[in-house]
Amino acid sequence: MAAVAEDEITSLRSLAEAEAACTRCPLYRDATQAVPGEGRVGASVMLVGEQPGDKEDIAGKPFVGPAGRVLDQGLQDAGIARDEAFVTNAVKHFKHEMRGKRRLHKRPNNYEIERCKIWLDQERDLVKPATIIALGVTAARSLTGKTVTIGKIRGKLLTMADGTRLVVTIHPSSLLRIEDEAERHAAYRSFVADLKAAAAVKPEPKARGRSR
Image 1 (tube, rainbow, N blue to C red):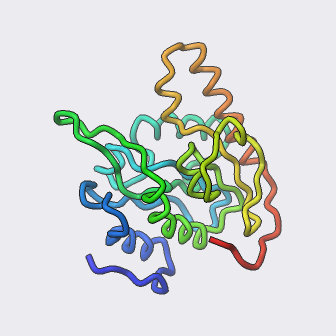
Image 2 (cartoon, helix red, strand yellow; image 1 turned 90 degrees about the vertical axis):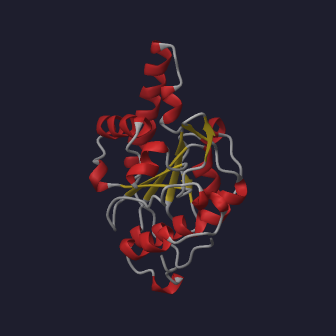
């Protein structure tokens, strides 16, 4: 697929075409396809995850696997309509390693996050969300430009350079790894509380420019 010039990206459709042709880092070589964000321009809330998983890589849509089901339930319980939000990932290709016939998730490194940041910036420019919810450390790293500890900033209301409000919480996949049922339910309630708090944020006036 021919590359789309950055100045030709004026819609989510043209952005998806540019992402599909991306070779900015090696991850495209082993992925089925790039997975663009999903939602509408003007959505007040943008949710940013880490990267597509196996199911997302095949479907070409974000958050359609097990973590996506947790996110959908969390959004419902928080009173956020998924079709009114914009859902995406910091990295658009599935990073994995083969274990027999299984493709096992591998966390993107800082280089891959930085090389993919151009697409997340484009999504922000097009969607113009009032609030962004960073789901996990990779999303927080991409959005803040630095490595962060979730426990230190989780649930705090941060303001980005352009006035967009940012709330950092856990990635829903982490809930799937909690074996103790009571602990898992408690962690899920905290996750929903973070989503509710982010959705209740009133937008601040936007600054004229944004540093990327």
